[in-house]
Structure formats: C-alpha cells, structure tokens
Image (cartoon, rainbow, N blue to C red; front, side, top):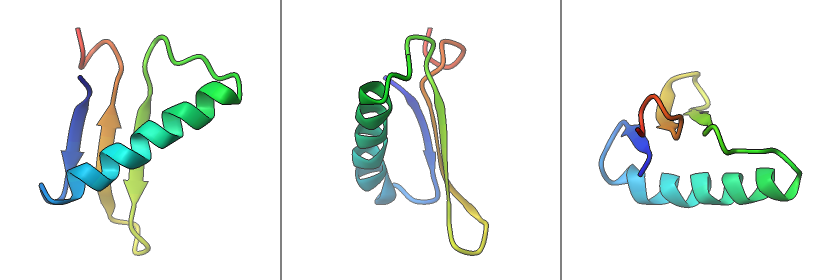
Amino acid sequence: MAWTWATSAACNKNFDDIATGMASFLTREGVRLHQGYLLNLYGSDGTRLHSYDTTPVHNP
C-alpha cells in the first residue's frame, strides 16, 4: 500500500488510476521501481494537488 496525500478524498480514486498507469508505463520503459518512487502532481497554478510515495520509508 502506498502513502497518498491529496487535496480532497474524492481525488484519490482518479489519482490512483494515474499512479497505476504511470508505474506501468515506467516499467515498460525499463525503469526499475523495486525501491519505490515518488510521484507529485501539480495544478496549472503550481499548487501541489497530490503526492504518491511508494518508497520503503513510507511502506515498510
């Protein structure tokens, strides 16, 4: 389970879909994700909307 932060609970479902798709894309491109990854999503005004962290620090 990954640690997820979002500006609203309603956004989490859509963001999980984005994160899953991103991980799949990166894996197909040869990126190794065995140590986890950090994905931040920003709005058009530069405000951070989501943070998705799968690193071992947040997922022991």
